[in-house]
Image (cartoon, rainbow, N blue to C red; front, side):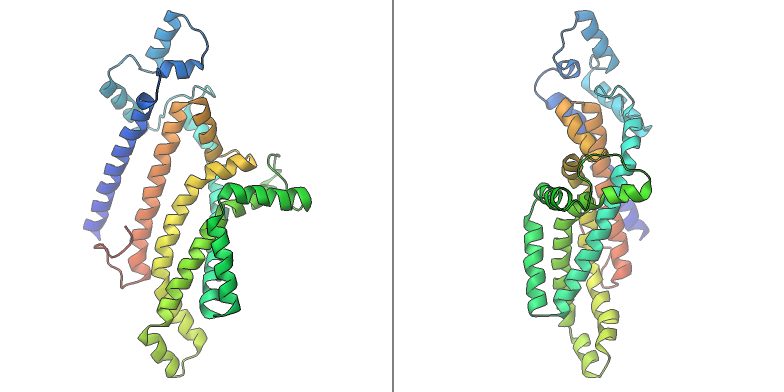
Length: 317
């Protein structure tokens, strides 16, 4: 366990190092002078351009710029936003709770809808199984922005059950109420995929010899499903579910923009549009770090859930 954990942490450090190089290099790979992006086309005197280059260390050699930026990142200083004129760390800190709450609600919906749908399809062959397969097929094939438009049109505009994009929630319960439609839009695709994975894993476990023997010996089907089938199916379900949870962080940019939710996803879209590189670099680096950490947690949990898996490579990658 210790060797595995050390190896994964070293791998995490290597991934983040390469990611930091790519993220930082994006500023210089983009066409045009970075100063022109910072000025947004406004005319400026040579003195103002020189001061701007000095402020953002653009007059330093590229390795020196990277070293200064990376040193600031390690201290929690991601620079200053050219669009919002404030520290990027403070800007991200103000938007992070909204995204975290949205992802948490979506993850709960994915777990409830995905697991219940997959279990129902596996244990009830016939019309129920076909209905789940059709529903999950539609869910996985529908992009989140299409789901967002459909939910707003039906439940906000026509029925008026939920508020539309925008608005200011009053208190935590009202905030959850405003996040209901965004959470469903974010969770629907992942819930459909998790339901299919759960169904496949359950069917695989139902066909195993020890399950058939237990049923033949007269053990109650509920007991067999709970103690043998569900437990055996949890390994692949947790592995895929962890990857989907990390993927929800990436999908927030579409859903938050569609529903005007003030989170990291909408901030990323605004920053890309305004070419606010400091914010784009910070959010991208944090998203990669969160994705890798979630997958590391899944790899550590998988052998505890299913002892048949090994930390030597039989778990998730």
